[in-house]
Amino acid sequence: MSNPQLDRATILTEALPYIQRYNGKVVVINCGGVAMNQELRDAVATDITMLRLVGIKVVLVHGIGPEVRQALKDAGKELPVVDGFPQVNEEAMELVQETLCGKVNKTLVATLNKLGAKAIGLCGVDGGFLTAKSSGGEYSRTGDLVQVDGAILEGFLAQGYTPVVATIAQGAEDVSQAYSVSANQTAAKLAVALKAEKLIHLVAAEQLLHAPDAPETPIPVLPLSQVPALIRNGTIPGDMAGKVNFSVEAVRSGVKSATLLDGSVPHAILLELLSDEGIGTMLTH
Image 1 (spheres, one colour):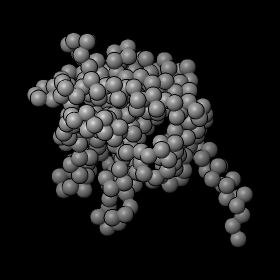
Image 2 (image 1 turned 90 degrees about the vertical axis):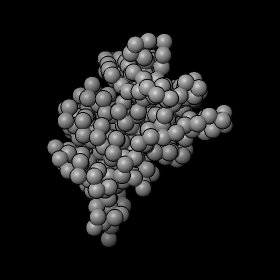
Image 3 (image 1 turned 30 degrees about the vertical axis):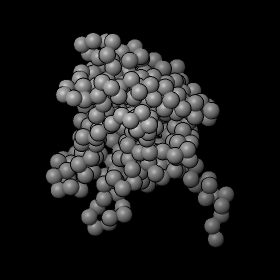
Image 4 (image 1 turned 135 degrees about the horizontal axis):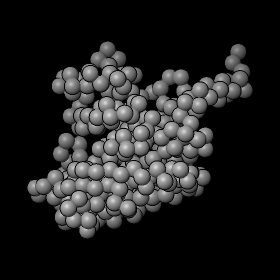
């Protein structure tokens, strides 16, 4: 017969070696790939707070999500998507920046602070730590990152803060200009700059990588060498290829591993990091 007290103790002791492994290390979490209701947002905030309290340094990155899309829709502005990334024109940029850096960022910060995570909200314009150039064309306020400076985040992490980063970057050629940049690219490049132990992308459940013979089960470990073939044969769908390719680049640049994690599962972050059986797809050498 199962002993509930013993079961709970087993769960707690199972986490110990993982807490020891990640203690003092940096984990970058990108929540840009999943729409979170209040329950999921609270679960993510709880996970991050627990990680911070056991000595794991966390940076949370967020990009254009449902709130920004709804604000643009209400204003009668368009937001087309190309290869999974929203395209922002001159007309939409002000509202994107206002909603992303104001409403969305501060809501996430407030949720984390309520739980004791000591969060601080930033966008790439603050201190100019994200710099981008326009990708050109009609959607000229969509940017490509050209420089990432992790120093400002390292400073906040050293002081016990949890940085929450909105993906708006400063112009490389004109600092008065701002650009919307990919949360996938931002998280990957910040992970490299911060010498992170782990990069985690929260993704929609239906976008997880699936093994052909077990369609309901994610591939637990994916060697980098297999990624190109899986993109070509469609196992990795087109709208997810960019996220995966940025992750591959991050791991090849020194990040220990990158994981694609089902963001619809409450407390998925804790289950992935602090248990014997992770629930995501880990990209590694």
